[in-house]
Image (tube, rainbow, N blue to C red; front, top):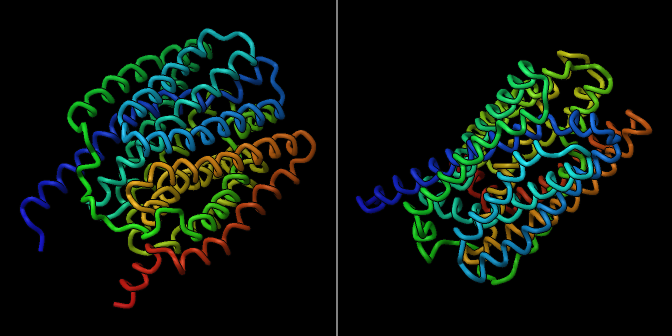
Amino acid sequence: MTTSADRITSRSALRFVLMFGVLSFFADSTYEGSRSILGPYLGSLGASATAIGIVMGLGELGGYGLRLVSGRWADSTRRYWPITIFGYVVQTLAVPALALTSGWPGAAVLIVLERVGKGIRNPPRDVMLSHAGHQIGGYGWAFGLHEGLDQLGALTGPLVVAAVLTRRGDYHQAFAVLLIPALINLALVLLTRRIYPRPQDLEPATSPGTGSAGLPHLYWVYLAGAALVAAGFADYPLIAYHWSHRHVVPRDWVPVFYSVAMAVSGTGSLVLGRLFDRHGFKVLIALTVVAAAFAPLVFLGGFWIALAGAAVWGLGMGAHESIIPAAVAPLVRADRRASAFGLFTAGYGIFWFLGSAAIGALYDHSLGATIAFCVATQLAAVPIFAWVGRRHPAGRAASRTETA
């Protein structure tokens, strides 16, 4: 029976997710706006496809790898907000600083620094969202709702950048304009911290999780499948570099294509989070198969096929940002989630880096080999996800729902 107190807590949890979604809107407007043009920008500074692949992969490696430290730090101190705020400061201020760069090595440092900031803040942020998800009907819905608002910002930022480029044709001014959403984001982070100083209180201390203090075998198998998906998922800057280098998409349209990808990602997150709560891993398996098609579309197609590829790429990104972390939460106890998120995304990031470097190197030698690598590594995750899905708490719950 649902009590009045439960309803109040549920509404409070929903407001928390929405507030976090709004502040993430401005965060994504900032850094996704910049990422929509990083490939062409680095190329204009003399960076090769291999260099771009390594820089972007190194950024993901640093960002994801640091989550291992950040997650353990958050679990040991329970200082979720200070760690999260520090990460947002580092991340959002690194982006407008790109306006001051004139060589690709200097820009590369800021690109990596932006990913490091994201790596610092994500594990404690995800834990706070998971506490709210316990109250609003499912982890998939909490992460999906947040990601939907988050990706709306990822749609807006590149459009702003496209407008600046269309009017001025200047990458540096485009980066400078992103200082505005960066400052708004920081102000909203502090406001949310003031209203919700202890988000962990949204979830009862007796919430279910694994009985063991360690991480279960299922967790590690799931990580292996997610790592394969990460390795085969090309970074957008490399895709954008291909479009500009091969004259597939005009320069001013590159950030617009990214906005389309983010729109699909955000909309997909809202729907897919709900579907994951109801149907479990069947949703993730289907998405993995569909998303693997992005590579031939973006690398072989003309203007309109490339646009379709950008949409498929965005759908895959939505799964990366919402369903994949949502599936981790039920596997571990609440007091170990930050470490679990951090360790999971650290391994994920290592394979993202290795995959990005491999994709960049392959691109310089063979476009066909690049596409084959992207498709094969992602499809290799499908049988692993199928095995995990039969044993995962979300998968078992979905099976019981369908049987009933």
